[in-house]
Amino acid sequence: MLKKALTWLAVAFVVFYVIQRPEDAAGIVRSAGAALSDAAASLSAFMGSLV
Image 1 (tube, rainbow, N blue to C red):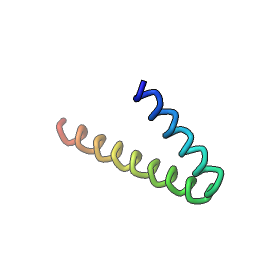
Image 2: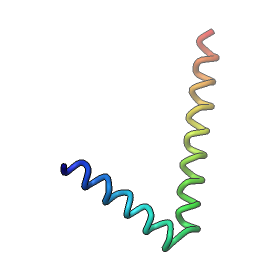
Image 3: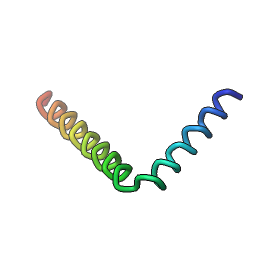
């Protein structure tokens, strides 16, 4: 029950943040995407160096 309540609270916070500060929210998503892209490139380079 607590886990469900915390999940809904987190979703509500994200929605509130996106509504109040859309530019900041977009920046966070953009930087998270860049971090995932960098991690994928690093993993790919690592796997390529094993061969």
